[in-house]
Image (tube, rainbow, N blue to C red; front, top):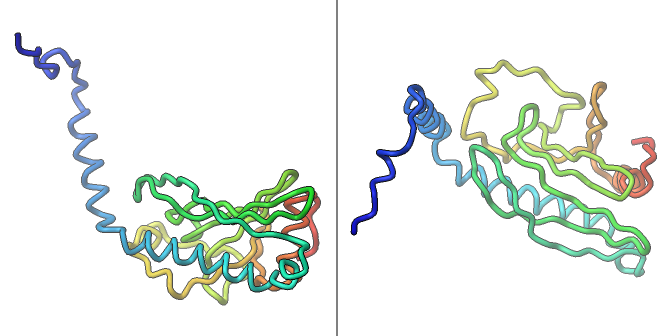
Length: 186
């Protein structure tokens, strides 16, 4: 006996076909984002390289250990993919760099440093930026965006967001904030 045709029994909402067509059109509007995803994953790895370089003396003397793992990320435009997370073991506590995404409003990339008592945002911004800039909606939808000129900076929490360069002192403060939950001067 042949299986019944399920489409005959499926209720239809009149505007569902239009919804599906709009979804397909939105996907086509973004185009092939495989290059964007590759640049994003490379930027994450570059951040971890910078972190390891700045903290190398502490790893060398046994004060901390680094461990890489894979995290599953889902972004509407990119779908599901894997990116590395970096855990820094500090003895009795640890903090973890966790990628958030690249298709974000306000920044083409964010990684959160998460500890037991707090978190700190690391964002991709243009080198000269020290605070968010308002971008027209039409400009923010440009794609594909080349991530090459963007650099990682540490972001304060909203509403008075400020960006600061990553250096040894600011990274140490971010780690203490994530681990202890107390904002430090950055």
